[in-house]
Image 1: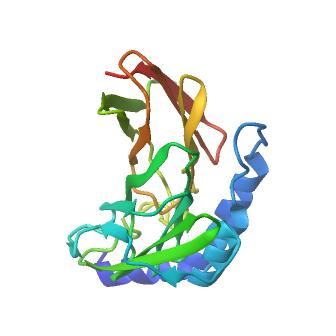
Image 2: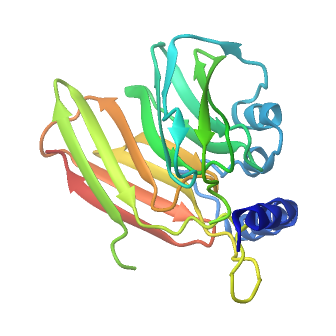
Amino acid sequence: MKLDQKRRVFLKGSVAATSVGFAVGAGLLTPSAVLAAWNKSAFEAKAVDKAIGGALGNPTTSPSDKISIKAPDIAENGAVVPVSIKADLDGVTEIALLVEKNANPLSAIFHLPKGTLPDVSTRVKMGKTGDVIAVVKANGKLYSARKSVKVTIGGCGG
Amino acid sequence: MAKTIKIRAKAKDGVTTVKSLITHPMETGLRKNKKTGKLIPAHFIQEVVCKHNGKEVINCEWGASISKNPYLAFKFKGGKKGDTIELSWKDNTGQSDSITTKIR
């Protein structure tokens, strides 16, 4: 299959597939006293502000230069894009990682208890060129930063 | 279940760095099986928790857009050589795994 066709499939499939996938996931989730329940609505959200609001309780964030996102300028393979987020802020309790152009922008929420440094790294999939967004909750306030990543091969079509 | 987690924790100058790799397909539910044309069901890790001597040091909620065979690295204050680090994950189909290691 050519790349263009794959992209079609991806776009068509995304709406239907996510709802099915998430329904299955939700049914099998078992609540636990230790773990916070998986934030289904935030991960299902298709708009960036809704995802942020669902994840951290408030969609409005103020841009901050205290947050640094380390990600490649050009990702050759969108399936594996290394991202590191570091915040030079005190009292960070949560970090959310979003990929703006994905069908479901929210990628991860990191809950950091006191003593854990606001410095996390992981790898994400990116469907196409766009921004990686980091939202940091520090002392109850939300700060955000963006970094644009150019993707040459999409990560969702396989 | 076979061991799916590789982990390394190192203490230096009062800060412990934990790096881990998990073997997991991380299917988004958006891909199609090329032979049958059917969608491959979503199968991805939703929760990752790491504990230091039984105390939680990070709790992650992940979506399907984390890459296949996920990588996670983070740092926390405290921790010394020989302390116990436990990392566990749970996915959307109810599978889970955990590993216990010592800080080096």
